[in-house]
Image 1 (cartoon, rainbow, N blue to C red):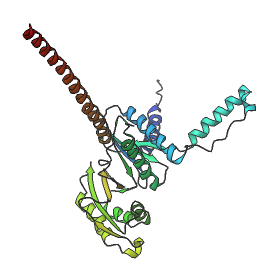
Image 2: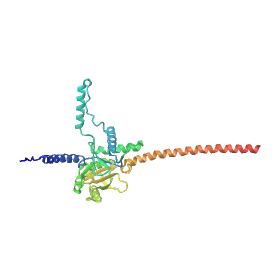
Image 3: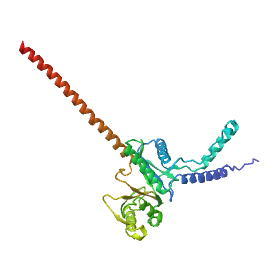
Image 4: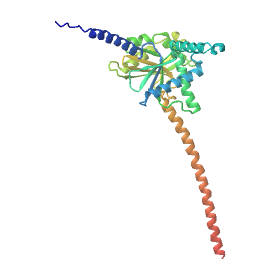
Length: 315
């Protein structure tokens, strides 16, 4: 009689695959855009995403250190007496690595849901992301220096909600939304604004409908609730732009100023304008020198010909 052993590998593999799928879904969930986040929406034209990631981290960290200080400034300095002992020095390095891994970094890149783009989550306050972005564009324009190579668009995102009309209405009635609008224009009593919406990988919502929700809400606000200010829409040159970008099941909301000056927050267009201006100045200076030198040479040649002619006639 032959005894048949029951193989339990299938059952074991079932639970292993089930656990692996759970961990995979959790990691993928954390690596995507979530509601109530804020940060930066980055687009790029290069296929080498790793280069773009390094450039974004370097650019944001460099300007953030200048504006807000170092990221981890509360680290304790190591005593010199402990460094003399090799074992204590190694333990100290291990503690540093553990503590740095536990800390949440200032910037973290996640998937956006569209090609050639990603989203950068930040721990900075909502008002600080506009300040950081404006500093990057102002420095590029004034100093006429190119600070990026692969980044195409760098847009600050102040709010994120689900891609539903009711969720958008609940968001714009919050005080944080109005404070963001008023903080960008503190001088004038009338705040001129405009709303623009676009969609990516979403066919349920209409851009015009989303725009109308925000426009009707802001125009109905009373000056008593806005510190004496009034919202009015300007189609041509508004002071503040409210940009809505629907990506799959979320809505990214930007509240920005200097929209035309920053060329719709397109950093590559700013870099191109800076380089073409410098090249134009160089090309404008060079022909004047060449023409002037050529004129001198022609005058010298003409003088030589006249002298030879005079000598022949005298003879």
